[in-house]
Image 1 (cartoon, rainbow, N blue to C red):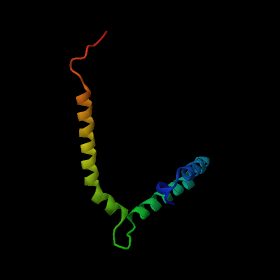
Image 2 (image 1 turned 90 degrees about the horizontal axis):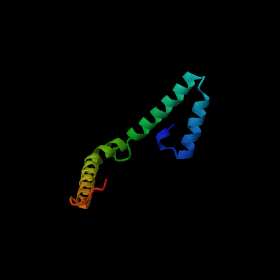
Image 3 (image 1 turned 135 degrees about the vertical axis):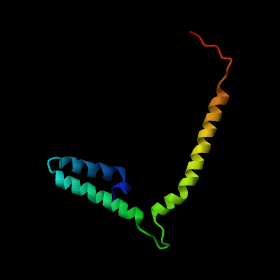
Image 4 (image 1 turned 180 degrees about the vertical axis):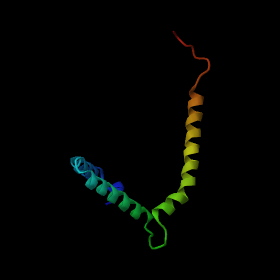
Length: 91
């Protein structure tokens, strides 16, 4: 089972089914374990070029970190430019 890649309605159905199994701890644990196993197997599966989703994420992570830092700097700059040090504070 690839729980991470299910749409919202399928996730809700799966979670409702799992919640019905509260008295059946072993079966519940087995279902969750199967979902985690399936997700890990899916994201580590190699494609035709010998690359997996994990490899792609590792390659793109530095770019995303740089974009996040630039975004943070832009937001800080906009926030600081909107501050007027001469505004009156009314009690």
